[in-house]
Image 1 (spheres, rainbow, N blue to C red):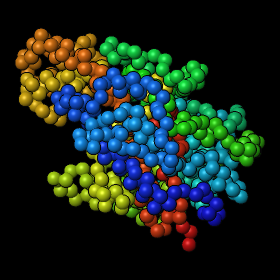
Image 2: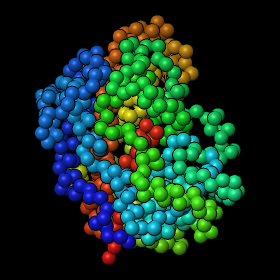
Image 3: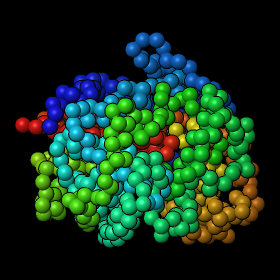
Image 4: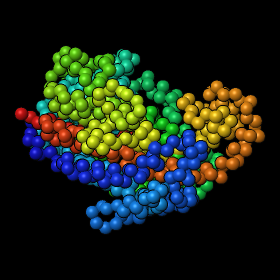
Length: 587
């Protein structure tokens, strides 16, 4: 393996601790906003408790380009953001500056993907991969993710001299199949679901058959092509994810003056192009569902510089382009040595890989949108198993992470918590809470280019909670109303259906009472909308904390030689776009 000193320099542990300290200083005041639940917005007077500003001034400030941070070393004057006595938000402008400052990009935590790929390929003969015309078997979002991640994985494997890949949380096997067929790697895809494993085997069988057939017809490079299995094309057309922004109904209440072409700093053609990309997306991860505003607002300027950038499939140096030219002239039959083996097993931090993979050898462990605790457990396995020489992990579903300090009154026997991982945050006994972790899943980049949250449905649910509290004496509702809003013709219909689903006596509230609540809170809908806008702006800071925690954990491991955060995907196409990458020392 090439000397690790050839890899890009990354922040050391003391530097990361300094950034964590500053970030926690901001989040101590801001976390109350992320932790507030929309359901309790009116019952707990959330706006009055947390914000010392009129909602219209907040909305107006968020429509304007944010002010520049004060000159110097990135110092943020926190007393200007929150009142020291009441902890209420005092300045939307200062809040935006701070939130922008504490994002992954602005803190300088990311290693550029092009820089990393170039370093990994330095003086190395590149694996050419297969260049047949790709059979369509993935939607646009998944295709983008698989192609970008597989290119990085292949480069790491070549750099480390590895042939075996372990794909944890492999799901339907898209990444595993691609790594095996295109790059000739030996891949074990491990998923906890027997259904997924069986489906992955069948899908890979069909894909391999089409792949072998197709290479005789053409030798077109796969990059940039969407991939879908023929039988899945029709099925995907029938299934419309609730996270698809085109399927979100327009609000009759929340349009006001924020509904159309904001985005003042970007050309109309550029915004149209980005929105067209969004229009091509299909199924989204669970964490991204029901988390978008209907009413767009000018957030483009709140994004870090170069937040929405072409990724490695679009920006390549001359060396990479030459490699691709060579690929087109090579035979395209998949390597006979390539293997993809889907396996079923529930992976934990203590899983014994030898019990799962009989021919385990030195390998690279990867995971594409590994859910909840699986992402941190992937890093723990990497740190503890000598055979695992490298890791490339993209996590998701932060709301499903277990937190060590979240339930102080309950006793848990759990040994390995999803958060925090690093010693610094453990010593701080830091807790985000589920609501804050849920808000970290909000997609600022998508909202900035026109996707929205269902403001009216959130408003309906918040007002319903007031009715439930006043007439049924229930202050905390553990049951979920679910997808009732899309089936309802009015607020009255929504309340009737919801009460029935919750098993509550509808006779207790008349139509007149229900509509009185609606009329009472309708003028305050702007509070809810403005508050959710603040949560969207804050979302990247919560994600930064979670990613910093994982990076610090890796920096603490003695046998880890190199570790970094890499922005792997276009965040408009795939909001959970950051990969945690690490390599072990070679003795």
